[in-house]
Image (cartoon, rainbow, N blue to C red; front, side, top):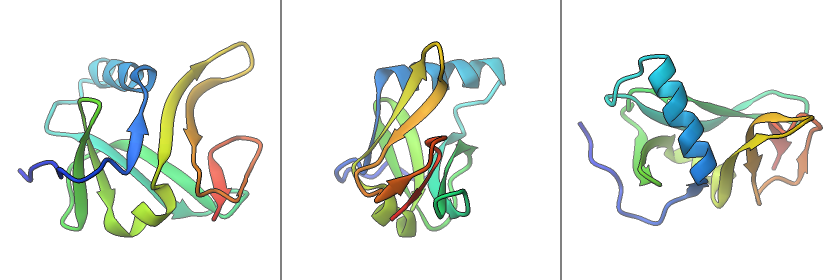
Length: 116
């Protein structure tokens, strides 16, 4: 298994996000051999959509240990995600992961797509 990158963390995971991710791992019996994949893909109402899910490391991934969670990210995605904070929000009108991305020029109303 590849080791975590010791470089500066490209993104931040809040304590609330990590708590929710660990709860999902427990509920879905996801083992520690998986890590959190963070990335982008074309699409969404603003041009790009965020990818967030559990996966195995792939050949071209950078691997980070962020707030106790192994995070996999393709090198090419870092330009769109550098400095982003992922949080868990639970309120009257909104419940889910939120993405605070300083690289986003525009975001959509749903908060899961952006343009760069």
